[in-house]
Image (cartoon, protein in one colour):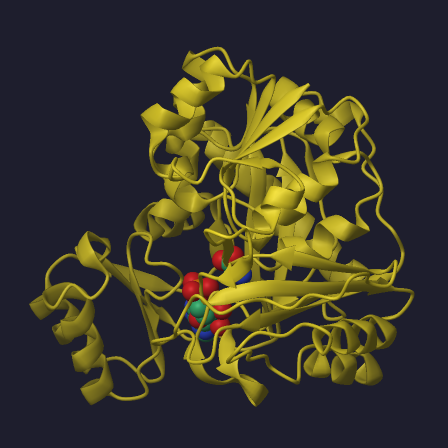
Length: 427
Ligand code: AMP
Ligand code: GLY
């Protein structure tokens, strides 16, 4: 079989390595892929993940048997709709279902209409009305741009003055572009955060192992928000009892709501949850695999990934048992110095010749230069994942392997998993 994967980060590298485990897979094309992915797939750097017509033309001319669309932008732009029209089976939601991530107004209204637990909220398209509302609000409060904003469209002002600046930044200065035409203002929730990714064919659901992201750039959750500086799985705060409540009050009702709205969700649905004192609530939905959650979740998948993805596409997931390893996984992101603000690119990577059997280096932001050398090309450069029987061992092995990689300005957090280990001691 020939496969196509749309995207070019650490998440896509993880998906590709996992798909390769299926013996019927011949060639995997990555559009655009990256320098490290080129060791595992045929990369096409000229085709951007947002160029839907070029992706569909490529798929048609390369007899693609199955496609996986991983990033949010092509999903929101209807890449899956176009591929289906061209007769190509694929994994991922269509544009209508991708609104669950692409529009916060859509997802908040969906949760309200169907009684799915989430933070109380109001929607505004007029900055004056938003400020009027904020005058009577208590702080901290959460302000979110409606549309996709590279994970940066969420601001948490501590006072009215900060809220005023936040509304101006999003709605008037358009810091996140047209994403900020509408905003959601919502109640500030507290409690541990859990990410649960789930395979679903619209009706059946197979939640993956839970995980925990570390979004801030600095140790002890300080500094700017990033795409994610490291992950661990499973998340110790996600106990069996919490999982059961989530299935009954969040997962199944969300799938039913999407069906009732005429946009059944097929693909990977990501539930960003907060375990509040009043029970689990939805912070956000993503219409795709998380990055770098995928780098700790998929290594624990025992069932063949392509088989699961085909069952999602064929709507036969109810007949498939999806199995997971019992152990733990940890991923430490190696970023360019200065990320997520300004950073320099083009530094040569030094990689170990071999890695221990339980360690994998996923490439996120690198490319091959004119002489075929790997050089840095993005903010998040590599994700070092280790799997082990316990989280403690997985973290030790991931950090040890991170020391064997070099590039100028290499930056990482040193406390990935620390909160999870502390939570395990409390349990
Ligand atoms: P996002 O970029 O949408 O993942 O949001 C960034 C972060 O903002 C989340 O991971 C939460 O830590 C925080 N956040 C979002 N909504 C709320 C809320 N209602 N209450 C407290 N924190 C929130
Ligand atoms: N790691 C969070 C995300 O993928 O949105």
